[in-house]
Length: 198
Image (cartoon, rainbow, N blue to C red; front, side):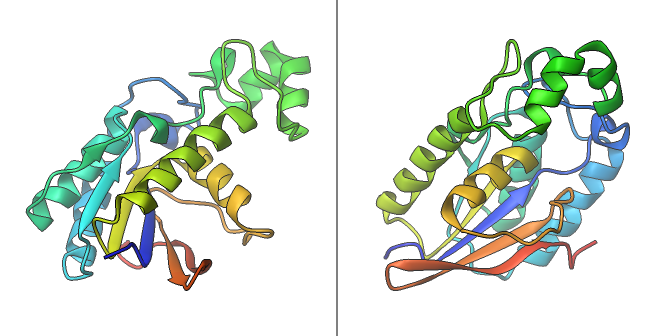
């Protein structure tokens, strides 16, 4: 059976999220609020018919996926291509701090250039390529009808931006669910950044 529903889930809250710091590739764990969010997410999705869970191996995403998987009686499949955008020299900083310390680099990143890499980081194109490769492999696996993917806000947004011409303006909150539904050979966004469990 091929996948017909994909649930893209952003990980639970971390202290860096609460402080509005760029985490990128840093191994930041869930905080107490994030643990509670993940538990609420798992309870909400318990009867949603999820057949497989894929997860970024980064601490915050994997912890979120493990809480969901435990409720469902399964194990998440870790895929390193689902990790967050590496923000290089911006990591650990707030946006304001990054702009103060690296003004030129911050301006170039904010301009949205697809191929611009923050020093020590990835470009949006780098992220798009690995996320699309993971997406294609998950679809080709043909192991489930409903698949949950626990990843990160920037990485998910970049993937969705490559799949759809226009996205809603809603930001992807911690443990938000974006639901994609398959209709023949095409996909549609059935729900974007939703948090009914919070």
